[in-house]
Image (tube, rainbow, N blue to C red):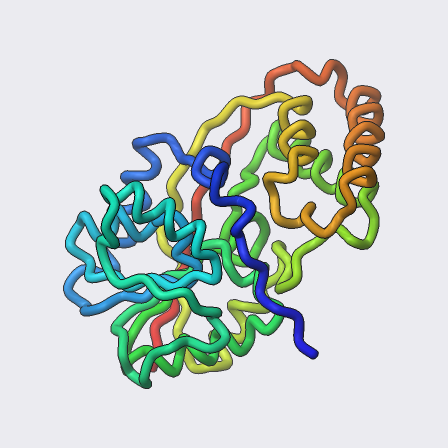
Amino acid sequence: MARASRSFDRAAPFYDETRVLPRSAAAAVTALLAGELSGRGPCLEIGVGTGRIALPLAAEGVPMVGVDLSRPMMTVLVDKAGGRPPFPLLQADAVALPFPDDRFAAAVASHVFHLIPAWRDALTELARVLRRRGVILSSRGGGSGGGGRFGRGEGAQVIRAVRARLREEAGPAAGHPGVEHGRDDVEAALRDLGCAERELPGVALHRTMTVGALVDGLESGHWSWTWSVPEEVLHAAAERTRVWARDAFGPLDTRLDVETEVRWRAFDLP
């Protein structure tokens, strides 16, 4: 039996807090996506969640429709919109979209394919519900596969090393049910579907953080790749990671400058 896509019910109370972008960067992302979507027609976002992407696009006049497995996440979206759905919202899995063929002119998928075991089926569904010459806009998080959000430079290298160490310490239960970050499987599959790929301009971010805060955040269970790890195992893995990081990088409260980019790719359907 195929594994189900991962619901973010548990993340609804803290999702926006942990994924927030600086105001200027968020505005730049919205402008970038709106430039691709404006005038095309109706746009579907799979994994619409709390509306972090879709609400600003709707405010720019893009006619949005959202689907998500998590009703609590969409409840946050509605609350942010003043208590009423600002556009159609449906509870559905991306692998079985409740729409007829050729329904949409565009689709948005932000950090979602790592949550879907049958992610190839989700891509096929997107291609089915999109019209000819439609576009899929995708951002996938850190790694070569379209995200790059962990950035460059010494601070970013430390962050990658700490995350990798904690994941190693947590054991085989740690991970995503779908495609892993750092692989270009999704992009290759979209090209196999006949899509022409375009990399959109990146939106630069500068952040400061500490290794201690990073480990605390991972231990708190705010990131979905930790959800399959038993709580006691996660706590023990975090403590071992702190010891390792202190030896490798020094005091855990040392502030790191991290240069990152929010990166999106466009896939034009034939």
